[in-house]
Image (cartoon, rainbow, N blue to C red; front, top):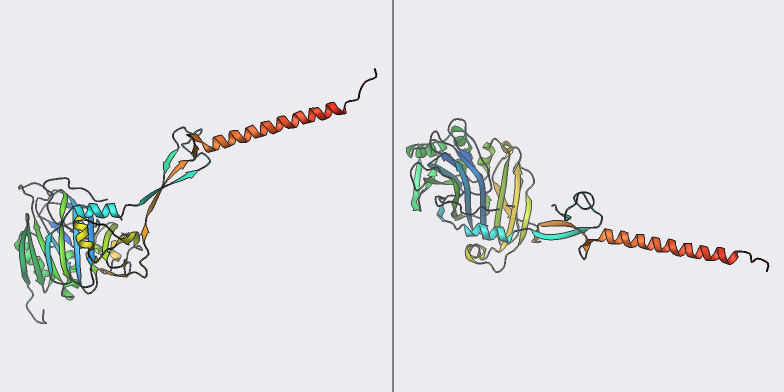
Length: 370
């Protein structure tokens, strides 16, 4: 699962995506494919997504996705587009949510002791002995429809429908951005399924200042009979990708398949209690939290979106981190005390045996004539 960066710059605007860091470098027009969508910087600029954290909340009828990104690069403006299965409402999120989730899912720390000294312990190298280890009708003219538009802080948010990926390209081009051909092709399955899109224009508060740092979260809500996490665009990434996801639901959740990546690894599972702030709002009726990480060594093998389902059991789980220490008694290594005691016993036993043997020899000695 994952450490959430804190708000490090006043310019940290508000955008977000879903799921941990997934990047794509375009050779003609730079762009980044992320788990939940695509970031498109302005012409002749570059943008890098250093970290991506997402929360999916599903109560059986409605899905919410809260996304937070850390970005860097030379772009002073960018567009971001995300496919969603149904019409979405959009609002700003709260950075405190990720801090609360990080704290709630922190591994349990335990200490284990060992008896015999190891490398780094006296007498081998000196030291204290501390060590550590460790998802339109046919024939209609293609076009894009703007079903809603709003301002969220410094962002211009548009909710779109499209009959063709080219329509999205036209909309972005009208607003000064170009949709790369590979991304246009990757969006085709979403068009075929009649998904809609959330498009956002980003710009720093000061002109010609690069978009860098932690961007404030973006909170999306839409109807969903079953929870889904958009991942298909990640197959365009040229390098191995990592996914980190928080799932909030009435029960423990899991991805239906690995969608071409390694088996998802659960880092936390359990019901949350005594929550407050933004986490309390999300956990009302969905208090079971599942946190997972997944690796995609070959992104081109990703074949779909993460469909999430209830796990077979609600058994809780928390990672445990062990710290190993040399066993001590009153500040002295136990092995040294034990060895010294054993040597003392051997010396004592040897002395007793010697005394007894001497007495036996003396008692057996012949007595001389007077």
